[in-house]
Length: 212
Image (cartoon, rainbow, N blue to C red; front, side, top):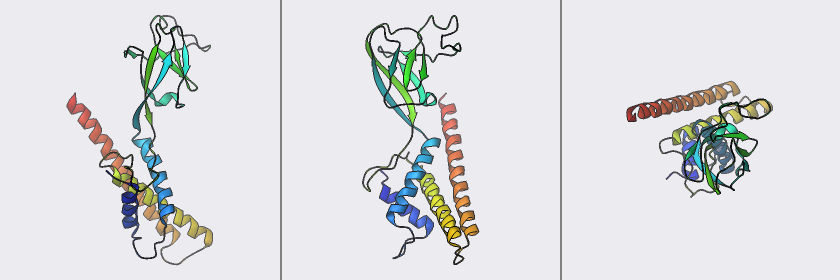
């Protein structure tokens, strides 16, 4: 289990900011970690599910939480059977001939829309990909896949350096490392994070192929 405190400590080590008078306070590093978690979640979204009750004869239902169409992966009807995504629609929203003869679904706004009215009353399940957020305290487990902690630490560290470079540039400060040097260091950390993400994707694809 990895906590926010452990991630923050790792970021301080990465930034060499572990002295008695740290450059960044805990609140700032927490903000950088929150941003890193958001970005991490775009690359490694969390697999989630929600349900919605549909009455017999219903053709649509508002789903909570509000989801974008691209987030929805699978839909299961009240009997637990998978329902295919509707493949094509006319400009007026009517399914093309031949595609409305079987049940299917599409997404409109925050609603699940069915090609055919629900045959029975039941609870439908929607599987979707969601983002990841940073825990609000230092003891709760952070929503990071085991082994991906370095990605979050690198992204947060890069954000910290980039913010520092911007602040130094605005103030016209020239002491210590120049803004350009700090920005280059931030870019290097970003590149390391991207390489880890790419390696993760390759590993995931290799594992999937092996299982097949």
